[in-house]
Image 1 (cartoon, rainbow, N blue to C red):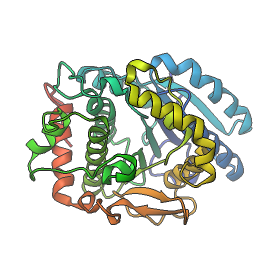
Image 2 (image 1 turned 90 degrees about the horizontal axis):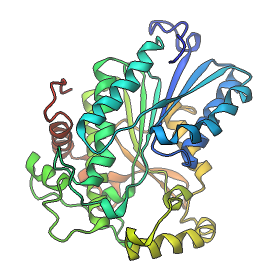
Image 3 (image 1 turned 45 degrees about the horizontal axis):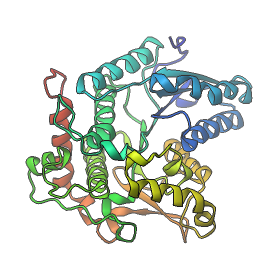
Image 4 (image 1 turned 60 degrees about the horizontal axis):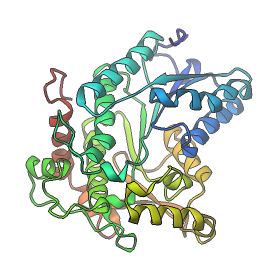
Length: 358
């Protein structure tokens, strides 16, 4: 249970109430999530601010998260209170709603009326399960894993007004959404401007020759389009999809031969060569990615990028680039496709549910 927050009335100036930062992460060993929590703590101490950081993760990773969250309160000289809560969506839609209700209920029980910032860093998917169909929805596993928990959570936070005027939402995304041909990710394509064309990608039926990279790119594109649609529907909230870049988090999962020989060799090779990739500006230091996320989450320094964009870092200039301006990415700014992606995801997350579609 979260202790009751003091001065939680939204009408008070933000500097006079306890701010709430929510980090949703699917593993305890994600270096970017860990560093974001650390940087938010350091910032609060430096500015003499009082805030609460809630880290939400699957049950099996809570003990691991507490290893790095417990020292943060002392680091902040008690200005920051840190809580680890459960967010454990499983392989069915009902569990996504149940996990969301449990998390949002805990926030409301704590007396909070607004989530000031939300980072959704739900990293990776298991290659061998990418095209496996989920029984209650028909979604392929990767689509379910990457989107259903996110959509259910954002829907609930919006419905209960926990995301409201001034809230900032950052969702970890990927440049694969606009294609990275040199890395084996072709530009995602959409056959027609219809919800069915997006549904066919989410359930895998549109991909005649199942390929993990092709599926991943399309799911990332649908997520980026969904964020663009949300930004237009809720202009009072800042939504951003951001790529952390190729960090060590991309390759720190325990790959096994049964994940597929190509993925096994690729991950092992890149993990070995990662220090070289860092030196050559291909890989990204996780601390840099975390700092970038914190800037977007807090608008400090003032964040100049419009809501709704998928941003990626240019490793040569170290500047953020709107991925819709990069070759292959123009469709990410297409309002029609954004709303179709939104409608397709909504049709799945509310299948068999009486929840309000926002």
